Image 1: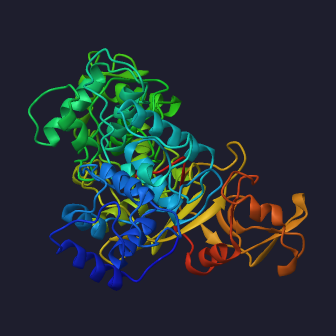
Image 2: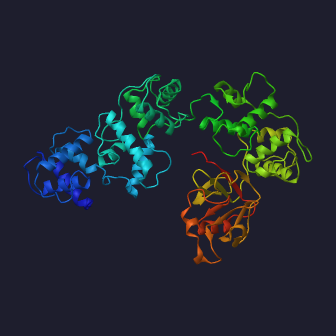
Image 3: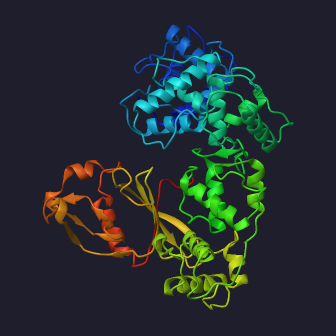
Length: 532
């Protein structure tokens, strides 16, 4: 697509807006050529059609522009049209499967915004992006809008994703409705943090509750139906996010923010170890079982394989649950609870939860007391426990913290300031282990190992090994020999997906950064995924 100097275009276009008359079919001259060049830049006319003659193609292009910018489709360049042309954004050429680059990234960001596409914008127009475009076209068609060629995003579709050129509103939605329009609504509510289930396309009572919550957050009158005003606010760039997901009953096998919140609350109380997770699995069930044993209340948590909204409210209201002072040599369930909480706050590693207060646990208690401004006795008396099991408990920190997301196949390196503030410093692509061979947990027995390491069982080498736990390490991609020129290209190409035997493979420069910068004892957290 041809580009023109903005200064020249501005002078020509603003000169046009000052005219009393308009440009229309049959007109000729430099002003028509300037108009055509602007239409070419915005992809309404093809390159080479700036001949200065206002003919049928120019009129059609102008009508298309007017229609997509909420202007009367007159086909004439009046003052309002020229003003809108001067401020209009340029769009990329039609995007289709196989395309790469900035235009695809922008397209994907719009698709994610509306809820058509999950994940991150990577700038590659693949099969998932094509499916998202098809879904967008289906929604546009239902709303009576032009959809373009199937599976491709022309500039009209790109304009739509910028909140211009029409609305995807296809009519009111209410309880009992089903279909793609409801599915789109649920996905958008999910993106904004209201809806906490897998969207299914049925407008049920939970969907209605989420709509009501959104309307309240947006300052609209109370109601649970989706009208035009609510919809346009919902998909707008200024749509208010939910302060918290709308509560719902959860059960074994469920996923989502509510499940993660319950896990976080159980972690706060010391019944889980605090490793991020958002699935209601055996681990969460065990945590609820421990809470039931602690409380001994028959009317609370009747079934540890489910949790109602009312039970979640009771969980949120629970205090620190202090039972007894804990000191060196103590054993038992209360020690396990203490250690789980210390682990969740990074004072201990997952492997240190053993139910007995030894030197490591005493040191962790003391460190917590120091950071919390308490007397560093190493004894977890009532005051220490009340703060430890509260939402105000300070986390331990090292110079850096490494967070490994198995879902993302990324390592996120955070730098911690003297005041406890954290900054995301590096994001590193990686390969974790096939299956479940990479353990999840919180690790504190970490340390650099070898500049070059030989894997005897696999007859290959890696650079910059850094121990996480046992034989699980960060290290570079593989080499056939102790030589920079012998890189195993397959291990390099596999970065971004599971490929190792449990270790975490990295680009050589990323493995080197960890090896050089992360001291022994650096906090490492490995989880399926991390919030936000």
